[in-house]
Image (cartoon, rainbow, N blue to C red; front, side, top):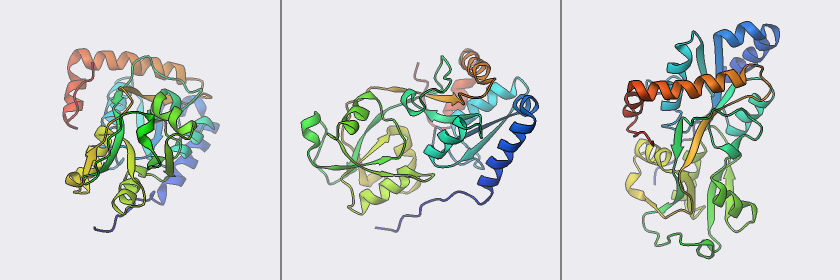
Length: 264
């Protein structure tokens, strides 16, 4: 097996967030009117690398909606827990790729901007498949620090029925796939599209198999910072914008670039 390379944040990331925080504190109305700063870890195709030609379909959706109203969207990558903390403390305006339980107290749009299909994944030569809680046994599952995986999986983790080995960083799924290939965990808990994207990028698609799930689809949102005065306005704007993009056909065009179909 080849050695896995784990991405790290760029040196400019912290400076970008600190500058945004400072400007927001000094010129709150002006900055919010001109620029929305959204943060997350990399979770392609929902949100990918900021400098990429395809930065993620949720980033494209946010840009299409907010730039229509004269706002600029800036997207920065950092560990998920830090992104949530930064938004809660006012350093950024929102987080990308949130399930409802990912960001308690945040302002969520009525309309989601994506749909997550979360399940268990193992190496190809494994014969294990999830059937019920008893089937989990003593297996160790790779998860990402601070993530919600849906009510059933979250409950199994909280009750310690599902034994996990958490990782952080800006690309936790890549790290977990590395650990799976090295035999350090038995399975990975992951979203289907994100896993397919990463295994394709790493050229390991043939090594990984789907092993079932207790979860149905989970809506995914851009969730806005609870302490920002215009978060409610931005949530409503994004929700209305999703309807407009869907009606006009622009949403379908955005999703097609990432090989994703509209979930509605």
